[in-house]
Length: 538
Image (cartoon, rainbow, N blue to C red; front, side):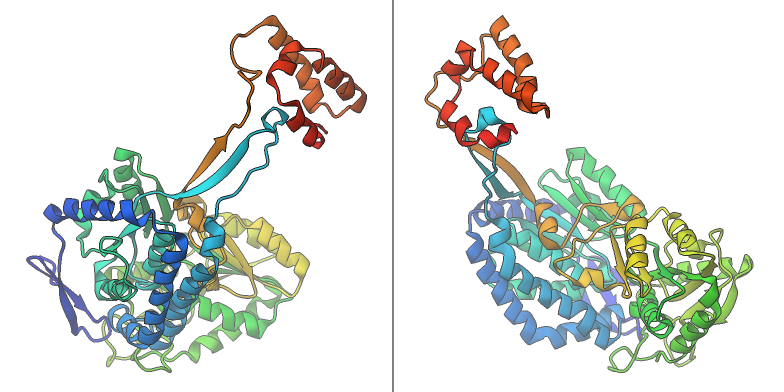
């Protein structure tokens, strides 16, 4: 039995020192049906709550989080291991910002739209585009950002009128449980938000359940595929964010000092356990040596230690299994000719716990090495020399992943080339990683990094049924295109091709005049509506 499990209890362990944070009751398989039924019942009332009222609840959640941000940040640090300052800046600030973003924009984003009909024969109709909630959503989130990621799923879902069940990683279960406290303080009705402590082996009972209407999954490619297979049982739609192998391109005109500082932060924040962290660098040959030297100098400054100290830069990694992956990538790279510039992975100080790894810089790397092709998710920064930006873009795209990428250049022209050349969900210039923290920026990947989007208005649209609704006020007894089919109708259609779609004005005008000779046209078409929208014909 796993040392963290005791019958039906899970023991959360501090990765810094191995101390017990707490024990929590696991949700058993027999309880899952009841939880989903409760969430389904809550949905049928919550979906009818006006957006303005939902926003009032969000404001209460925002106020609670402001008041409790410090205690939440410290819990994140103790349970997950990221430095306290990172917990404040990379978990709490983006969470607060996203809640504020929704309170400011939700009513506008979710207001119905009135489409303008393009087809002249439909000109008299009155249409609406309605944004409706889907139902009960399931969010499966990882341990690397244990508060921010589920909060965004939660806030987006309930703002849209859905209910949501959160299945966070057990390694950081107490951090996720803070979301329940937040929702209780915000007075969300029972069943609107539920946080479950569920073993991974029981997750299919959730993903394959007919009571789940959509799944938001953040995690590994392998698990994402399993989620899709499980969800396919009921054709449950999924949003997948499956990590990446994010590339960074350093151009010969880049500001070396800024690039080195930015890339070191992008590679080693959260001990490299960031799906959008920089995992490979391509630097132009003319500046490769000086850039690498600048990077090493920056890495040497990093302070490794107790993550609760506000001046600590690097804390422990969260789980031992990920440490093994990092070590395997490191050994593979050295065995294939990589050069160790600094670090070496092993614990930098015997006094530190077993979950600490030394930030490491490698050069002379290539795409035969796992460290340049597989997701490392740890504190290794491989740097590869290239002859040109074009070569760097080609290598950046030589990956099964496509979550995000970054470039470093003073040239707007080169920046545009990199932005448009790399196939990924995001490309930033002269900065990295921050994209997940901007609520107005859509977030998601391509290729094996997944599909679907969260964040921004586009993310909300993923959590809604976008319904087209129409009212036809016509007093005609029948429409032109209804039965009976006749030779007259067939001839009308043939002439309409030119009248509606030709770009040659003389032919178009002649065809329009011919259409007016059809008796059926006068009997069944709203002439006034067409005349009011005559521009649609041209």
